[in-house]
Length: 362
Image 1 (cartoon, rainbow, N blue to C red):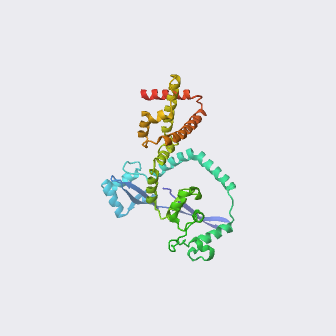
Image 2 (image 1 turned 135 degrees about the vertical axis):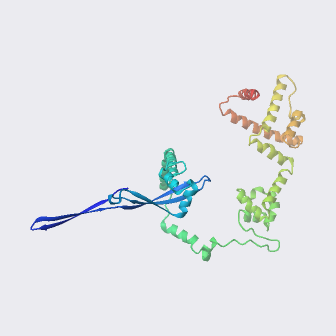
């Protein structure tokens, strides 16, 4: 507490001389100080206690005296926590007491943590600010009048717009059939395709598309979804028809199960062609008759390969045609490997042997 003393002097002057002097001394003898404590109970709850100190001071009153002004419900908190009001006040005087938690301590700890984060993230923040400056210079500036116009166009009375602005909210009505005829609701190339194919209903695209797949350009899955909706096909039906189409014949199934899996990293094509090349080399080195595709087609290896990759055994004519495709994929695969630091196919084989040895040790 700071004591305040105010001194005033009253001086009487007669004929230019001081004839009387009186001094008045004023001391502040009463001061109120309110302190708020947050008490954390054993249950983990936080209770607030306000303590008002009425401090009386001054020599006339015999020294400093402190009176505590505490609300009744706050007294109950002190009694419940420490057993009595006096014991509670003694505990509150020592803010480091384990029963009392400073209201500012969590804030200090949080501030320390934030300072550490700021120091670590400062380079990133500075870089981000520089990027924002560069983006502002590169991005075109839209005039204020235009942004205001767009805002009014979209947000002010949008439901009451007339003329061209009504297109923003007016739903596109579905085209109703006229007899067996129906025009597509949206374009996505259907109008042109239907005109060229001389059909008058989007559902007929299912038959016309098979005859001319290149006549309709489906650029992505969003476009495909629109086309399916126009053909009265929902998502579940579309997926079912995909599964049925993939498994409709063995040619399609081999395309998806073997060829396209090759581009994802499957070694089915590579292993089959490698086996054929090794058998050709063995027959050549042993002066045997040339190992032909007919021998491969009748071999146990091909039978096991068919079972492993869950495909049907092709006819010999289809097999010879498909195997040429496999050989092209095999060549591109090894050409890509040779573009790396590996210099020969033999070196690739040595690397594969080394990998197998490591796996066996593990």
